[in-house]
Every structure is written in structure tokens, then in C-alpha cells.
Length: 265
Image 1 (cartoon, rainbow, N blue to C red):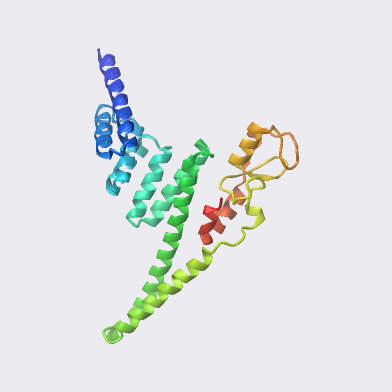
Image 2 (cartoon, helix red, strand yellow; image 1 turned 180 degrees about the vertical axis):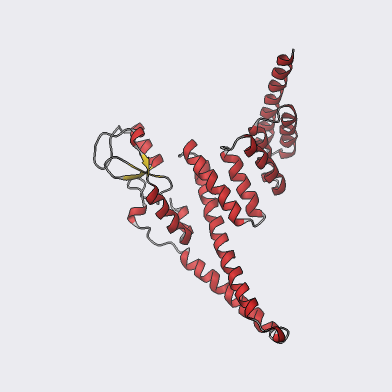
């Protein structure tokens, strides 16, 4: 009897999910939220119901609810790419840049493992670029502001108020000028680029012969062209690819200063 009740609830919840998906495609986000909520009531331990509802809240810019649903989804599934991704976006909207970047990086790593050629990996990659850029610019601006604040003499604050404001504006201007210089596209070093895509590495892997490729690109080559290294022509199988952590760290350091490189096609 109990098993029949559970099976019935599961079936009904899944139908509600499908209804919610249909509403979502028609931009009826309120109706979709209602459907997903009913599904959650019936089966609260299914993470996709929570992430689907979070996506609807995201479309309506209800970021607090996005955060709540994503945190619940992560409790149920620590490897949910969508949950970590949308939680990162929600934290960024609260100007929690450090935590937001952390969640986006987690989503990117999970996305690379699940589907390195998927659209979400590129989307997360670009959002991570913007987040790191904002975090660094804001941190630099706040540090400069703090320096100016503590350097003011107590007895002269009122007299120098106008001068202080001008100094702070000039300091902020210098911060963003530096950021703009770092964000001006130049040529990415060859050793940070894949020899197949010619783009900066996202997920570099090294072959037994010592050549580094973008994981998605070399896997695509092995599947569609043949089981051989495109540079050395030596026999190569997917199982032989190993993450190149040294290059990955080098790329990360480069992107910390050159956010524009995230967006290279």
C-alpha cells in the first residue's frame, strides 16, 4: 500500500515537473513556479525540482529565492552544476564577490567533468570572468578608500571634506584605469593556448607525448578523426589524457589580470 502511494506521488510530481517545463518555455514563470512547488511538496528530495524553480526565480530577478532553492538543491546533490552556478550568481547580486566566485569556480569544474562541450560551461566561464573583474576592481577601490580615510587628520575632516571627496574620486578613477589597461585585449602567450582551437585553455590535458590540448577539443578529435595525437601522430586513447595542472594554474594567474581572455572565441 505504502509503495503504491509513493509511486503515485512520484508519478504526479514528475508530471508537474513536465508541466512546469512547458510553462517555462512559454515564459509563464509564475505558473511554472507553482507547478515546481507542488512537485517539491510531493517529492522534496529531488534536486532538479529545486533548481528548476530557482531558474524561474532567476528569470524574475528574485535572487534571495534563487539562493534559497539552490542551497537546498546542493544539500541534496553536491554535484549539481546548475545549483552551484545560480547560487554563485545570487551571491554576486548581493555583492558577495568572493563567495560568488567560489561557487562559479565549483560549477565550472563540475561542468567540465559532466559535459566539457556543453553550453553551460561557456556561460559559466563568461560569468566567472565578469565576477573576478568586479571583485578585483571593488577590492582595489575599497583598499584605496580605506587608505584615504585613515590618512585624514581628525581635526581637519570638515575643512578638507571637499578635497577628500575629490581625492577619492581620483583614486577610484586610477583603479578603473588600471583595470581597463589589464582588460585591453592583447595576444595571449602561445603556451596558454590549445594547438587545435588556438584559444586560451579552459580545461587543459596533456598526452603521453607531452603535448597539451583543450580537453573538449582533443576528445572531439579522437572521436571524429581517429585515435591518434594530431601533433605527434602517435596512438592516443581518451584514457591516456591527464589534467595539466601546471598549465591550468598558469592560465588562472593570467586570467586574474586579463579578464578579457575569458571571452576569446
